[in-house]
Structures are given as structure tokens and as C-alpha cells.
Image 1: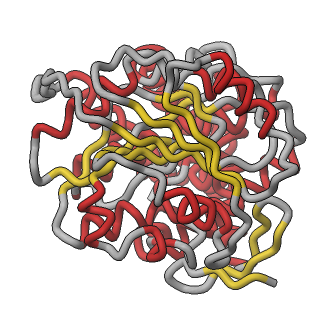
Image 2: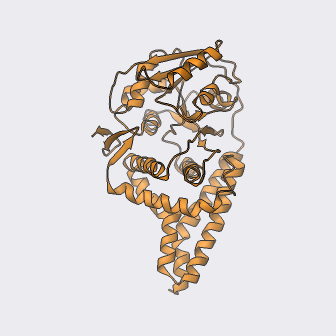
Image 3: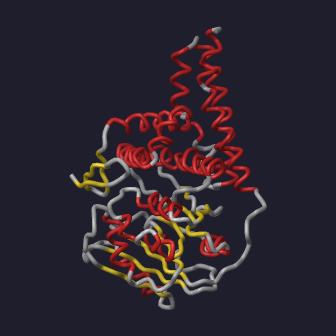
Length: 378
């Protein structure tokens, strides 16, 4: 084989996968099979909270200004009575007296996943049969509830996940994390959705039926897992319910952080996915652009290698710009497009290091992640 061809073969899997994700994105966001049915079913929103996030009040308030006909119950679940977020929640209750907002403070631990323990402690307060679990750093538009409930015209639908984005970044470090959503996470989910159907959930915002949750044994079935969102969707899918992905992204509000803390979180996510979907996660390595860059640069003449990498990033930038500008709407590109190769190299490094250990750090606590995703505190 001519040496000049080797770098182009090295980039082939990543280039093909990028084109595939672009096709899946176009099909998902432009298909005509979306139901516009308006629902007004009453909803209970469970929001586990620990500590302050960036703009916590604004995040919480976005759930109080929904254009939705049904009743909305908002339940905050907090473990510690001295948590600094509690005054923010009480201010929210004072500012929206007409809203059904409650605060559940309970330090009972049901298992190693403290977030799920919070949810278990607050679950008895939920009055309605349609439920939402939503992270504390998530902000939504006034049409969020309209959008996620429109899928429930199907009686076999058990859960709807909302994709998430981060539009506001604080320099290159947080831009690297935000790029992961629009260049990796959402494209990967859409490829999985198109090729095999959805069998897992995304944890930023999950809307589901109470009956579907009861069919898997309730929230206690999740308390031993780190990836409680993945397991919630996976178990509901295995119990016979259908899963769906909403088209309207929610906003994950980032805060200024160091690159080391961001990479630590990325490693935790990677190790979580490795133990949750071991076969698929291992196979995904061959499609990683970071691996393609290294193979191209070290397997052929430098001019050919640079030409191959340039070809790869012509495709990568075009596809990622479509996601960023047209579909996800975070508008990170083209401003932060120069970071995309570095983002890809970091993604490959994280993928590689995820195989070198089973320890993760989560909210200041150290755990060992067992095969299957179960947590063991250290």
C-alpha cells in the first residue's frame, strides 16, 4: 500500500461516523412524525439539590413560568438543613406564592447514590402520575412542559429524555466541556436512536409515568448505581415501555471551573459509561477523531497526514456547526471551533484512561464503580 494512503485510511472510521451522525441529526430534527398534541396532565417535578449552582435562582424560577395548562408541583429534595441553597428555595416560594412548591429536608441515606436517596425521601410528596426528575443546574424555556408531554399520546411510552446544551461558557476550559455536548453526546445519542432505538435515558431532565417507575421497583432500584439516569431508562425499556427523545434541548448552566475539575468529571462519566455499556463503549474507540489524528500523524508521511487531518476536520467542523447553529442551538461554533481538535484528543485520552481504573470522585466522595455500574463507597 502506498504510504500516502495510510493516513487517509486512519481517518476513515471517524470521518464516516461524523457523516453518519450528521445524517442522523438531520433526520431527527427535520422528520415530520412529531405529534403536536397538547397535553394538560398534572405533573410532579422532583429536583434533587445539594449546594449552590451557577444562577440557582434563575434555574429554579424557569420551572415556575411555564406555559402549561395542567397543574405543576415542584418538589425540592435536600439532605442537610444547613444547605446554602435552602434560602434560595425559600425565596422562590415567596416570589411565586401561586405555585405549588415544597421543600423536603431529609438526611436519610438509602444507598451509595446520595442523589437517589434525596429523591426517595421526597417521592412520597409527589401527587401526580406524570413525573419529572431534573438536575439542579438545568434551566428550561417556557414551552418545556408542553414539549415533553406532547409525546405521551402513546400509551406505551414510558419515558422521555431531554437533550442538553451549554450556551454560556467561561473561557476555553468550560468551552471544552460544552463542546462535548454538541459534538459528542447528542450526535452519539442520535446515532444510537436511529440505528438501534433508545434504551437509556439522559439525566438532565427525564419525564416518565409513575406506572413505568413502579414496574422497575421504584427509585430504590437505582440507589446502588452511579448512572441512575442511564439505569432508569434502561430498566424501563427492559420492562416493556418505549422511550423517546424530545427535540427541545434544556440548558445546562455551567460555572467557572478549572480544567482539572472538568477532566475529573469527564473521566467519571467515561468510567460510568464503560461499566454500563461495556461492549458499545469499547467499540466506540475506533470512531474517535482523537485516535484518528494520532494514527494519521504517526503512520504516514507528514504532508499526507496533515492533508488527512485537514479532510477529517473539514467534515467535523461542518457537521458540528450544523448541530451547534441549526439543531442544538448553543451557538458555540464557529467561535470555539478551534478547540474541536483538542476536545477530540481529550475525549480519546478520557476514553483510554477510563480502562485504567474503577475509582471515581462524585461530590467530594470517592467510590469504586463495579461491573454493571454499582457503586461501592471507599
